[in-house]
Length: 272
Ligand code: HPA
Image (tube, rainbow, N blue to C red):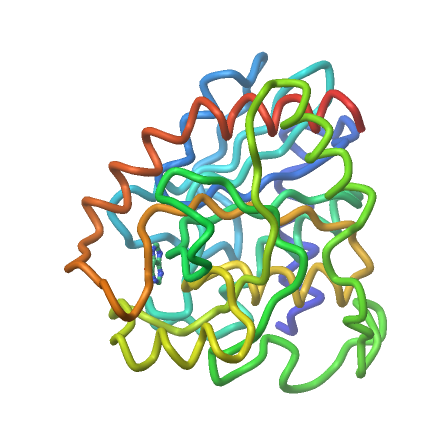
């Protein structure tokens, strides 16, 4: 079965459970899953029940699609994503985004936990992603291109939607939160970076560093979706005063920032 057929199988299963139109999708990053508590009239679909869907392996990542209502809009939330470092091929890492688009969804909010490399940031900040650097050493579009999904050589001159960034800035301002903006640099992981690597990633133009998002953004962009990217800065990743980091710390900070994150996301969705 080719990718197009697999996408259709997954899509048809989801539509058989709920065929109503979805306004926006959101991929929930590490520690940011609790926004699902605010989704009303929920349909929860376990990944393992969706044909062709992979199953997630990381602590702090559930494995559910939640379809319901938030801020008066119909939303699909992906609670638990697939990372390249888990060993999945890129086609699997980005499969859900393909299915989301096949469901007729045009707008997607993609979130993550990231290390802050810009010295103006601090742990607990949220950063709107203005652009990215793919430093993962691979690309989800390598291989046969299906014109039905998107072009062989997709444009990436504005992968992160300007209007959505402006909406998010407006939301943050109304709520009285400061929000940062910057360039997200994606590495494969799973180890956190060495000081020398961080020096390099800062030098090439990165404001934040993480192990996700870029594959999904490339694939969403391939299918001409409108993308809003939000990083939760969970730790400072600055070479000269780098402290030891573990996943627990990342989860802890993401958890502290979640109220801010949830209110901004809800406000953005309301404004759409
Ligand atoms: N580096 C890479 N990925 C991350 C980090 C980091 O410092 N924090 C959260 N995810």
